[in-house]
Image (cartoon, rainbow, N blue to C red; front, side, top):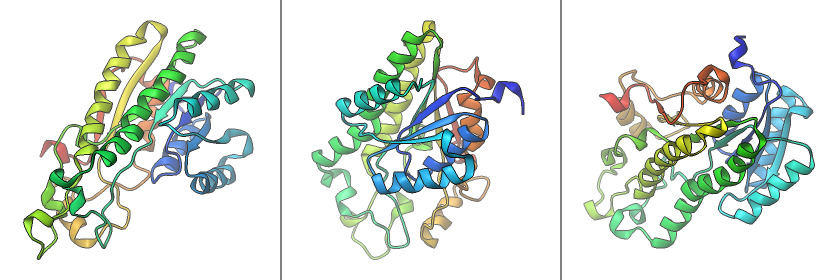
Length: 276
């Protein structure tokens, strides 16, 4: 392994660890010698993820903490617990988000449409996906800045940070136009905001040896319906969706010294969808 990719002696904190890509992001850190602190509000999902990773990488490398990214008290408590345990966080991966999914039955409904979208749902999704990234960066970035060791903050955005959702992907045959489901406005607003947050932090703590970049994945194959999948891959030059492990190498690059001169950038990995 190239020494610049070596994460030995470093610990990463991952939010939204119980989600689809949480385990893959964690494996990216663990495979290159780092340790991982998994955090989520989903206690059952978090424990399942921890158990899987412990079996693969051993007990000493994997820690799990219940942490609510929308609650600054919860984040500070987690930080204090880690300090008490002698754990220094040198990598923060802001991954937590609420992402309405399409499955074979299409779980999006008419309430997803802009004219029907509730302020309550808007506030909830922004609290998790954008405010959560801000609060975690505030708490753990401040600790990194004070340590003289510096660190890395990696924000997980989306290809929808650089393109608009194509609402034709979600069309349901036979429904009236005003009843058609859409990708909600929150996802685009949050992921675009994540890129802006990345650029801000990249300059704010540059003198403290803290780098901040964002990763924008494209769609991941996860049992979506055939119609949705067919329409989506027709818009991707490589003709397929990503597999869950195809972002792991990017995590390793962006969290290690291999990317030590990269700062404030948004890396889009989407099979070419955003350039077609």
